[in-house]
Length: 110
Image 1 (spheres, one colour):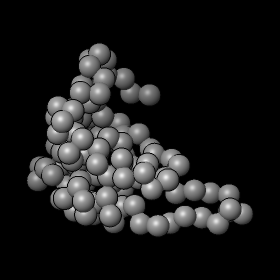
Image 2 (cartoon, helix red, strand yellow; image 1 turned 90 degrees about the vertical axis):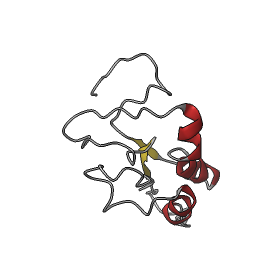
Image 3 (cartoon, one colour; image 1 turned 90 degrees about the horizontal axis):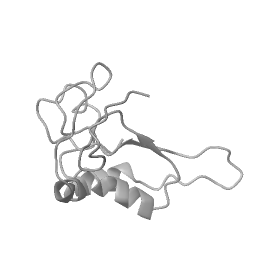
Image 4 (tube, helix red, strand yellow; image 1 turned 180 degrees about the vertical axis):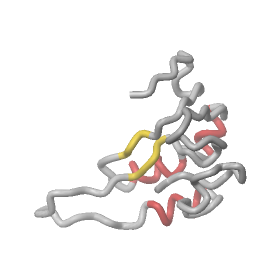
């Protein structure tokens, strides 16, 4: 879980987040959990690019993360960049709209 608990109005993340600071979430969310080569599974990080600053439960309605790319890189994306740097092989996409990443305005639920 790499969501950062930055919005007190968030109905779902507070109890699941490792904290409010990107560095703490990066550290705790990316602990060494490497698997021996003979194992047939790998760990996954979720939920890219981060649900921490939304105020809608994404299981009910599609939230929109309105931050600009500079803010996303400083907060929401930081734990995911750390995960990739640590060799994490799988990241689950979150179900939310992020205009700074996809400005098309198309809101799809797959």
